[in-house]
Length: 197
Image (cartoon, rainbow, N blue to C red):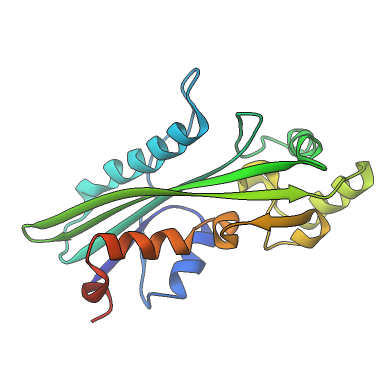
């Protein structure tokens, strides 16, 4: 089985390597920009689906499973993407300070084996509550991580205890790939035995 990850996220690759020995990475060429008035869940589902549609034509080997995912942080119905710079990251963490927000990941899967083609989309939502952070807390945290490639300017797996008070739901979702959702999807698609033969 050829496992293809349509993502440039090192965290997604790492999590999937805990399951599959070999993964081929294809970087999808998709602009992840919300449409005006697009709800966070609608946006993240569209972004994941767009990634899948962008790379599906590049898949020439059978059997294969293509995996794409998009993750966002949202608070007050506002999508917090990847920060442009330090000031933007600081503003994001200030907004999250002392409050509960949601991390939403959408996964799109495409299983292909000759004429047997199956596609499935699903999502996972995790609640994350931040500690109350002051200016020095935020500055110290940002100095410890590479925040540029992280939605919401933080990473639970990188000094997360400095800023996170508690989570409710999938922690791998907060890290960047909801494994619980993924396993639910491959069971629903009836491909779990094909993947692990």
